Figure 1 (spheres, rainbow, N blue to C red):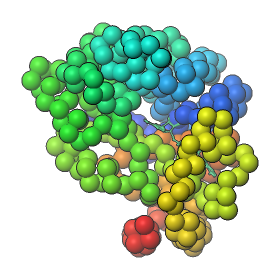
Figure 2 (cartoon, rainbow, N blue to C red):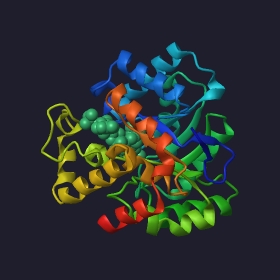
Figure 3 (cartoon, helix red, strand yellow):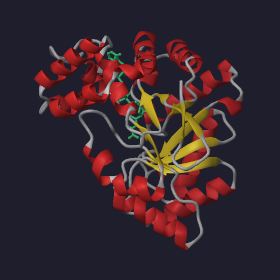
Amino acid sequence: MEYRNLGKSGLKVSELSFGSWVTFVNQLNQKSAKECMAMAYDYGVNFFDNAEAYASGKSEVLMGKILKQLKWGRDTYIVSSKVFWGGELPTQKGLSKKHIHDACDAALKRLQVDYLDLFFCHRPDPETPILESVYAMNDLITQGKIMYWGTSEWSANEIKEAFKCAEKYNLRGPSMEQPQYNILHRERFEKEYKSIFKKYKIGSTIWSPLASGILSGKYNNGIPKKSRFTVKGYEWLADGMKDLNLKRIKKLGDIAHSLGISQSQLAILWCLKNKNVSTIILGASNTKQLKENLESINHYEKVSKSAMTKIDKLF
Ligand code: NDP
């Protein structure tokens, strides 16, 4: 496993990390989630991603129990949470100073840790001034409750605004963004954020490297019974298939085959080739998938420039 600096910060984050969206609680119980976390850690993964919204807080409870059981030194791993979708009441959501502080305290309790390494604004909140959220995040850093704060799916302009506020009032600006980035979703990361990466040198913790599994090729012949798109409450994800050109996904499989790696590994390595990516957050509903995905790091060199060009042409 290689470790990349999270943007211009000194934090070394493993190039592959592990997240809990959909899987924890819905597909993985305490035993199987623990096996996945232990396997990831043994491969050198040091970052585990979570959010107040995942399984309505239960994903953090589960991860907290597992962290306790595994007894890893607190200085050996990075754990995150995200604030935005906390609850139904007006005070339980968004990025007001109040909700940011409440969400952080609740995440610390659920995860059973003294501080969060990374704390994300899960989405932009048009109803709260950006300066208020920047102040709240800065407070949490000063209080020692979080180490770094970041954004997730904010526009480049919103991120710039956060930096302007931080500079004007001498506050800490965001250290990282968490966007979707994969072969099917490139526009924002590669074009819109270009100036952000250049000017502010923020890190990125990218999500859904397999586009929720589509890039593994598992949906090429319809929706398999035991897959994410059949998990109760997540059927809407199948909408992502509507405009999908399956021929291209199949051809991606041919490229992977010619390189002697799996289609999932190729999709992951394609993301890893981009130096603006600090870490790729993997998702997996079992240890077999996770092992395959983690093993991709052993094939980095196989994905040559010509293979990357072929993929670019294909998509
Ligand atoms: P992926 O796009 O990699 O999707 C993971 C899913 O794909 C698995 O749960 C599994 O689903 C399937 N899969 C994974 N590996 C394989 C394989 N080798 N072969 C076949 N199928 C496979 O990542 P996620 O969408 O899970 O995102 C990763 C993490 O990113 C999340 O856990 C979360 O931490 C973060 N995230 C952040 C968001 C944000 O807004 N900030 C939004 C979404 C995610 P199954 O077996 O059920 O079909």
